[in-house]
Image (cartoon, rainbow, N blue to C red; front, side, top):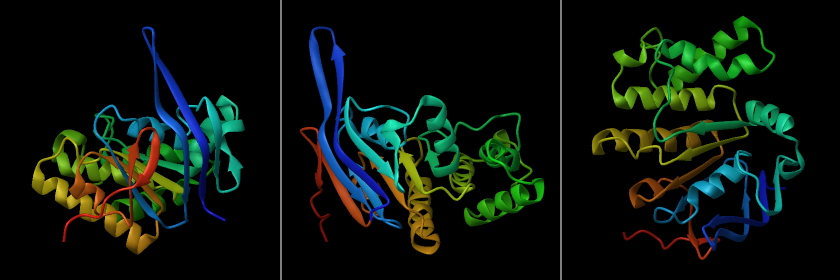
Length: 229
């Protein structure tokens, strides 16, 4: 059974008198350990699909099932609990709390689940080690480079060992060299830790790190062209 199943997901938005349908009957299955990238120009609906998958936005119709749970049937409170236990989110900007250290920023998601302080400490250290920042855990965001801040954001996304990690343009605000480092890090986390990932981007170089590459075409997720060799 796939880890994630989207069945006929449709989402409408009204803009004045016009109805926009960025998602029009999307069908998609994601296996455990798969790395999926979704491409498309700005405004094509990439982030809408990501937010539906993350349980942040509700579709107008269709079903979303993650690890056997039908997310589209959960209440708002149940969705919040589900996201805390099952979802890691990597934002385009790290969104770190400036008055908290790297360690404390990564620890934040674990405060929402029942866990001892010792177990939290172990999880946080392992997550920071996974992104190569074990020597920066007591640093504040202002003491970190942009790439290091994004690594803290990735550590925060993986610290609870979520069922799936979603990433929304995770390299969009980074210079070329730092973006390349983040691409390699995401690929390594998928290969070495077996993390299931869903990434949206408009950058072919970012999309190319995924094992499965899709694009949005007239509201549907279809295979993306293979990158040139």
